[in-house]
Image 1: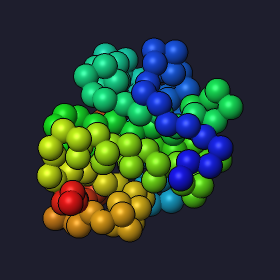
Image 2 (image 1 turned 180 degrees about the horizontal axis):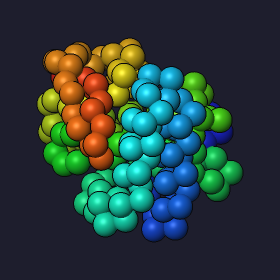
Image 3 (image 1 turned 120 degrees about the vertical axis):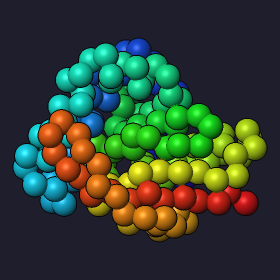
Image 4 (image 1 turned 30 degrees about the vertical axis):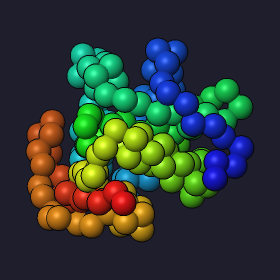
Length: 158
């Protein structure tokens, strides 16, 4: 169920829009679960052009698009690791992330993947749990001088 948006693969012309989605999602949504210093450290990842470009170019990326404009994206690091999953704050709770996750799960099943993994933020952990992911363990990760709580989660694909 995709409503008024489509799911497609990423193109080079999406770069600026995906950076904006990433930053706004963190600053306007995830910031309720993380301190301001953590949120700013997290958003700085998009400023690390080499690291950002490498992730975008070495992972499969699906984009949700509405009226020709990206509104969300998800990455899959082959074979089984969901990496970045972000939806623009103005488009959350409209089925965007669910549709993006469905695209990943479909591709994974087609390729014989039996177990999907994700390291979910405090903010995204309920989303993944509601879609069948089980928490394996909480963990603390350090990035750009800040410590972040997130959750290692897995989902068995039938």
